[in-house]
Image: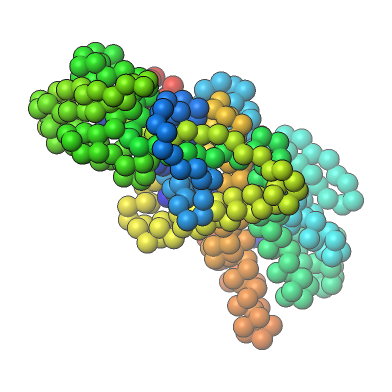
Length: 448
């Protein structure tokens, strides 16, 4: 469930490279009861104002997303997605690259402030498009703006720095190197909190009120639901005499399951429309697989409002709760990925999917873009801590192994072999994900 791609393909083993990941709101995606439909990403659709059709007087207010009941931000592959407008694509790519620049700036500043030699700071990877030199550091923009790296001259044969220089990263004490390698992760964590804090102060945090029943935001033309009188904006309060509770993780699935089990048989829906409650008899059509379908989009019956802090202390309080909630979600997603790897491996996606989702989020709401940026930061931080070659976690693991061996490093050739194998794996994985995700783009699928 990790959407992960590393940009380290051009980095030497001594460089610090970025990888990044994305989580998406899997249970905010509307459920469709009519198949086949072209799948689309609906990252924040169920969080939009269109879910406020209910006129019920009984409600419960809570922060979106409380730590105890978080929305499922498990990353997954998107079966089909659309880049949308050029502006939204540029916004998503801008967010992604800003996060990568922050990550690499963490490494760069941690090294520079300690007097450690740095030779390169790159935004993107691949061929160099533009570059300049300042203070013996090459700053470059590269052809593929989906990554970045900080390079050190430790094993650079073209470097004029003596091999025994105490300010080479490899010659620094273990603690200094740990600070440099972990600084990128720390920078992303701080940036994630800053984004959430900015959201709290500028636009406020979304607050959801849960109402009984399931909302029907959309009814497809010529479907069973349309034919039998169901309208967009209706709220299904009960199905076949079973009262539906307030919005919860299973309330939409409950309706879907009953309809699927009753093809060509009447299903009685108790519907709220405006201030009136009445029953509608719907006869689901039959899918090719024998299940029922009525051709509606369903979502939890929620009303989303905004809450703003009254003072700076409330702002820090709201930001802290949201930050810890999102962090828990990211860690829980990673845990479930490894616990169910055989099922989740196919759901790993790369930078094309990240930008596609980000573009749709950018077209949606400002809140979505804030959440998108904060989640990318947290995912990047967590993924980079994994003890894998070519990631920050791999470098940290080698340093900790050195500490456990009493300060004795592994042979340089062995370290380079480990890092090179990791970089090669990441390159191959990245190419695979880019090709697969590109083929899933809507306009590409339309041409095939």
